[in-house]
Length: 235
Image 1 (cartoon, one colour):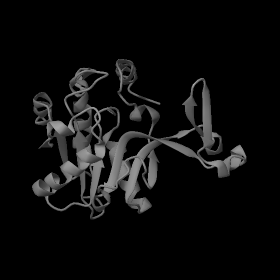
Image 2: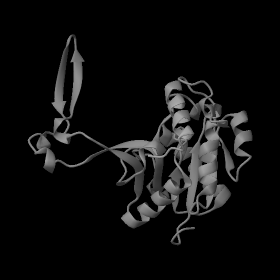
Image 3: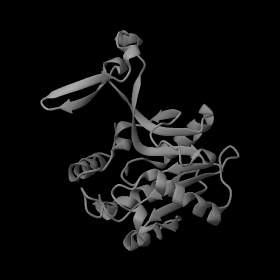
Image 4: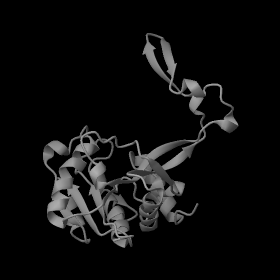
């Protein structure tokens, strides 16, 4: 408990993956990818409990080495195109049944293995400070909102429309900052999680060290993380 609020972590770890088969069990610096997130969650000072939603028998054996409870995820919620929101909605009542009442859910995806316990605790502290219902980790972009367009290809042509036309003539110095949600940490108030939840539309963001939010989506990403770890992921 932190500031009289209970925070529960959910780690979603399905067995399948297209780009890297069995990705969550693949070794990163001698440990399964999933284990890096389990370790960070177990070292957090502010998390009250940790749950892992998985469909995979081998991943369950990894989870059982840590103070983390298991949620059996049905096969239909462990597909390549399964929305994360559906995984959250499935897990929420099961967490409540096992743990009881809590205030915030912290989503920790195993594909961000370099996120630390300190990053988790900073994020928990930040959402309470910001007094919002949702927060996510993000990093700033060196872009101007008024110059971003969406394009629709037609034959050899690209037809566009501006995403922020009202900002198209704003000076670079006066343009609002843009941030990219990197997926390392999400936090929601429990009652904010429902069918209308938009995962990547947090009310506030926290900027973490760039190397801490590296995302594993390919073998090249995995190799890059290995190299970062060899240098103690110092910035």
